[in-house]
Image (cartoon, rainbow, N blue to C red):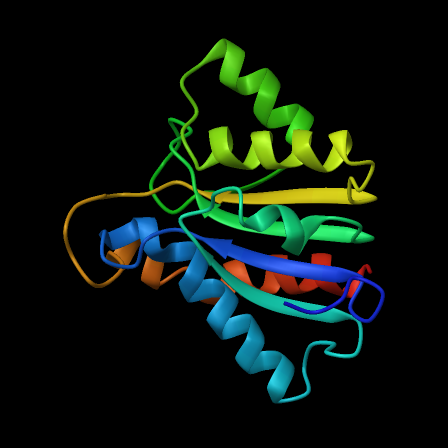
Length: 162
């Protein structure tokens, strides 16, 4: 983990790559990190992290950052492969109205903890991708695989706003 003063922006991919589309977050953050190594995305202020299945250990990765971008599989009731951009407030609101499912319970708790220690990131953006299947399988479904270039373009645009 890098010091937030050195890399004030962090992009975190969440999910389990052993569970089909649940692995979209790690797959996308790996592709974004590769784009950064190739020089098409910034590296001087941006850290790229595979956050696994979330959890409280992400507190130190997020605390004090200028911007946090989270990428995760999210059951939103939309067509498989749909990408949606949220803020934490949007997730909390939608969660109350429907049964949105991403790693939001852990993530919202981690965000609350950053507030409690007075280290909340300046901006938090969440990209959710509607899964087609979440089952024991070590690759993404075609519905998500074929849209990876679109996902990367949308997330790269967000990264370049920093």
